[in-house]
Length: 102
View 1 (cartoon, rainbow, N blue to C red):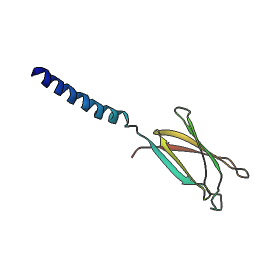
View 2: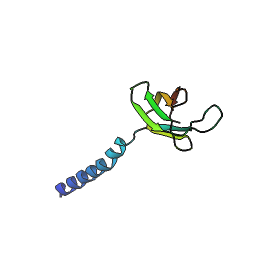
View 3: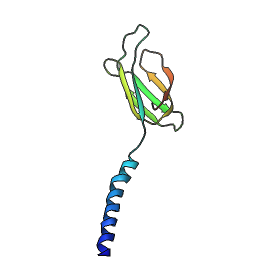
């Protein structure tokens, strides 16, 4: 009778660990931002190359602006970044960005 009770509690404990441990491991905190690339007249700029570089780790993320000038960077760790935008016929633009969790 004691063995049945022991295995019952052991099984319950093992089930709880299977449910709780993966949930804790998946709590990765990330942020992101989006925007629209425009020229000095306010017209959108399609096909601009954007590079985001982490000031802390040096990791880089790249994307290209859409046909309406839009871009998105997601799943970023909180911190300071440098955003560089390049497009033929335009001056290269650099901007500091801070990703925060709100």
